[in-house]
Image (cartoon, rainbow, N blue to C red; front, side, top):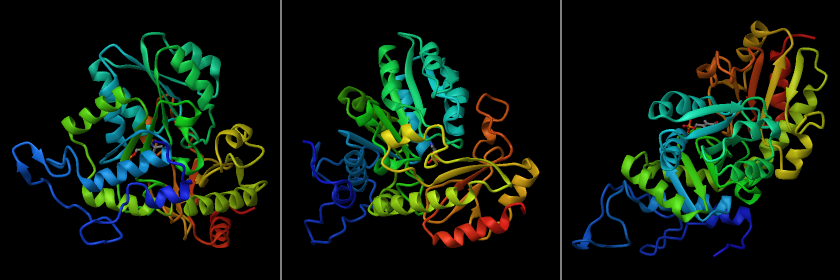
Length: 384
Ligand SMILES: *Cc1c(COP(=O)(O)O)cnc(C)c1O
């Protein structure tokens, strides 16, 4: 049954009924591995053993599905665990995957280094170039078209609706990694995709204190296969992790508004800075994906990449000189982080088509006071 409530309300209430036993407003953390049976095979509330299901995990899965507007949600121990379960649910030896040429490095590594051993073939392609995608998919052989928009770290925007049509015409399942936008800013299923992937470690969790991944889809047959992978391979989220993620999601809407506002202000402040060769932020009118982002997103998000004019050495020095922005992997938390993709998040794709230029710095703009963030960047940037 479609839920008519608005996003902000769903984020707080979907899957979060109060505890019927005590009235506790917050559903308890079911820190248990197994469930007592009334008689053999007669389960209380449907739960048997926690790899197969745990109420705290169910509350997260219900919540994420509601936010993405999908029928089936699954949560996992990490984003990559979610991706792995999805790929194994879909692919057979000899199948082909087409993925964007700047997807998350770990996604490429998972397909190219691990699934390739089971006879899965892959090609990377520029997802902004629809003709190139058309050429890359092989009808009947390409089973997955995998895209990420905005992409990581170059913030490319690709057209989910158009790509879904190309993927479907070839018989592929169209997967969108929605980690950068979050469901608050973009709903890939409504745009035509079949599956949404999240690293809930990032914006959904939002506080840099828990790892997790999620999948949302509408197709019941695919959901059965994914559910089987989740149960049979077992990379599930534990109850504490699921609970922390739910807790984070409740503030997603207000956090994303502030992340987007801060990032927009920073990007606009840095326009024309002599130390910066290029700003990659879809909220700038000069960004090649600006119009498309306006069409398929309801905000531009908190991720910015910067090309440092003086090159790799200056970029590294900049990354090591800020005080508020902390140098760390990951993104999407309330605190601002800075990364050097070519040696951090994207080290695994050096020497491949997905290699990131070595003068690129990636900012995950947090929700601190924006004047402090701008001041921090101005002090650390190479002098004018
Ligand atoms: C971090 C990330 C992943 C992987 O998620 P983990 O939770 O680290 O396993 C996948 N996609 C994107 C876009 C990410 O940023």
